[in-house]
Image (cartoon, rainbow, N blue to C red):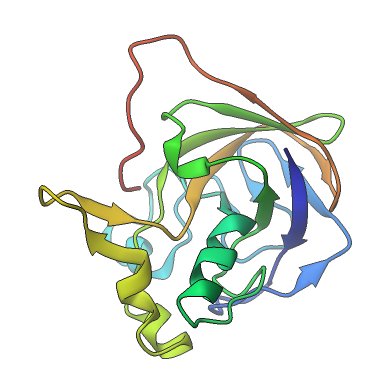
Length: 178
């Protein structure tokens, strides 16, 4: 398990360019990123309640998702879907709420929930939304555009850094929307 790539953007754009490293700030997020802050920064959520805590400080996606999407005919690269950190070797969607991800030497993230796919995904690649948002047999809605987290301990994260998981004690709470 490792960090594949890191991304940030100072503006609220859909995709984020790759950078050599990101600095995570405890309780805030990625230094210099438009979504960092102690209170919610997502433009839609700010309109609802600008004073709400920011449970979406750092967005992560597993690189294996891009491989699956390529198999369905969609070329998606790290950073294209707006994530700050792309991982390799861990099924982020299967982790429970409260899982901690230890990245590099000191950084620690705590998973808060799932990113909700929005129609901007189809603006990026027509038809892609149906690949990352669908119903499983039995009617359960499946969302697969990454997980959200907060910075528990700050630090610098770079591509190639190791990633270690600590799963919380049971009972586990599945990741929900944040």
